[in-house]
Amino acid sequence: MTTIGIIGAGHIGSQVARKAVEIGYDVVISNSRGPETLGDLVAELGPKARAATAAEAAAAGDFAVVTVPLKNIGDIPAEPLAGKIVVDTNNYYWERDGRIAALDNGEATTSGMLQDLLPQSKVAKGFNHIMYTQITTDGTPAGTDNRRALATASDYPEAAELVTRLYDEFGFDTVNIGPLSESWRVERDRPAYGSRQNAEELRENLAKAPRTL
Ligand SMILES: NC(=O)c1ccc[n+]([C@@H]2O[C@H](COP(=O)([O-])OP(=O)(O)OC[C@H]3O[C@@H](n4cnc5c(N)ncnc54)[C@H](OP(=O)(O)O)[C@@H]3O)[C@@H](O)[C@H]2O)c1
Image 1 (cartoon, protein in one colour):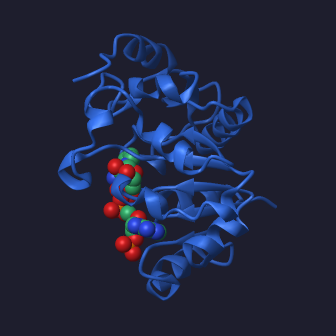
Image 2: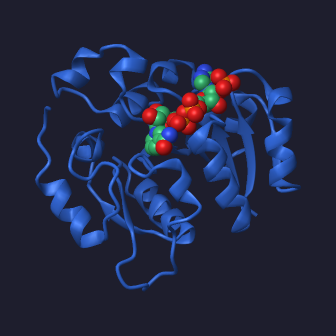
């Protein structure tokens, strides 16, 4: 049985938890306010889910999903995530996160910033360019004509492979962008961001992305 430690229980975290439980994962899910505030969600998710602190979720997970606002990634507990794959859903919304010069200037990537904070973990980008509602509605079986594709990127092939498997189980094809240094191609307001694409369309949109906006 594989356990996913989920840090962040908002729009994306709760939806990832719903789909993960549906397809057989155990989840340990956390937020900033404490497990006692997640009673309704874990009741809905059932016996394969429990609420915990972020550090406990990180420790319990065979791998983790980090899905908090970018401005809060400095709080993610590094030690219990050491040696683990961390799927990062982050996007940069300067209106929420404040201006980050290295992102504005095209010198950094959002997932690269998390990797820098978690040097002993293997960060892979995931679920950043799908609206949260669609995580449970848009998946289709492998081989379906025009299946929706999602992008990943990682400096660790095994992390990109895990996301590829997870996407497939969730009902999506994968396009692997390559290292995190290239993951800006799927960041906010690039052509691949938001809209529904199959793998071929996603590859085309990633290729034509501008480095800065
Ligand atoms: N919404 C979308 O459709 C979408 C799609 C793709 C990617 N994203 C990106 O994914 C990330 C999460 O988005 P979201 O829409 O799910 O955000 P959200 O609904 O605002 O939820 C954020 C969650 O993170 C938790 N959190 C905040 N700081 C934390 C900390 N220090 N430790 C543990 N948990 C913490 C919050 O807990 P509390 O409520 O207790 O503070 C909340 O459960 C963002 O970077 C967003 O841009 C969003």
